[in-house]
Image (cartoon, rainbow, N blue to C red; front, side):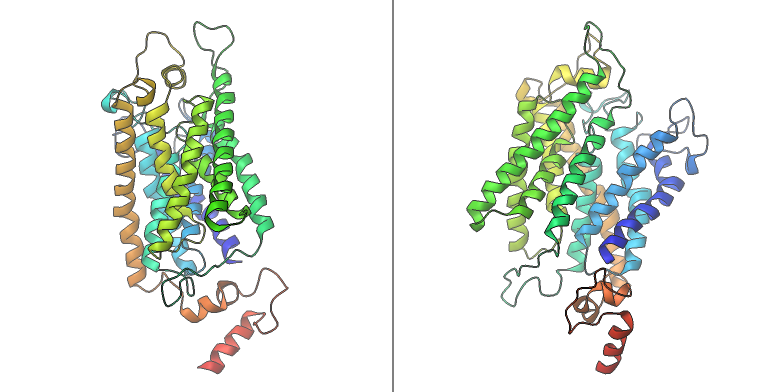
Length: 419
């Protein structure tokens, strides 16, 4: 009940905050616009116009609420519901939109569409390895760190205790749903399909859309295969749930450069994304860091790798196609390993650094204040009983253990008896 409700709340609260403030901060260009923050279109005032319409808002809204969903996974199973409402509103209405403005608005100081390109390049983050996934991952990092591990996650000697999810079927189903959705996330980030490239007879944005879908598939698939065998070597058996997260890690990583790299490069991306995820998961256990969905490691770590990967493997022809509609005579920096110099890689490193810094100075203090106000983490008794029964009135399923309270009234009666 708790997990399902938080996902619904991420959507409904994020809708209101993004409508009132978020879209304006992200894409509110105009006479008063600046490289840091948008200043127009609050509550969609003056939308539609010659630049944006309602469908563009709706598409960007989907990105915004995805960020809150990533963060909620990091602090799952031990967070007061009030805190979900607060952080979700703040993250989707202010923190995320600022980063989106930097990278995706034509006025943003990191944008590849800016009139004043950083290092003559701007950062390439086509569908949001950094803007969406790294933002959500770093926010989750601070939330999970400040809250601390779940009760029973580590024993008295600091060794991890397995706390598996309750339904592997839903994990696999969810992975395929996300896989399907990523084709909207990555190929769908082309605003227009029917844009022909000059000096060609059969190429246009439609070919780039198809290539983007292919690179997305290959990166996720490669990461899944590498995770399958990597986990087999580490734990001694074939880990189905680990493979699901590995696939998603590959998708997260390729999201930045999906439109500007060759298919073979996407395989490289997925290969290293899997090891980034595996390595960060090992490190998290050693540090007794508890992120129930591995969201920090998956979205944060693989998102950061995806930005660096783009700076290494972006192909010049594809960069010009995506950001200049294939116009001949345009010169742009591209991937270092492809002969394009250091400019693009430098811009990518800057994006990673400023996102980590921005989310740290905004979400870190927010979670700390919530913690000090004692409205962040639930009590130990409520956590052990489970949030479903202690906070949401009952279980999502009827097949509970006989010695467990089945309804909220039963739980409260036990609490009163103990006190």
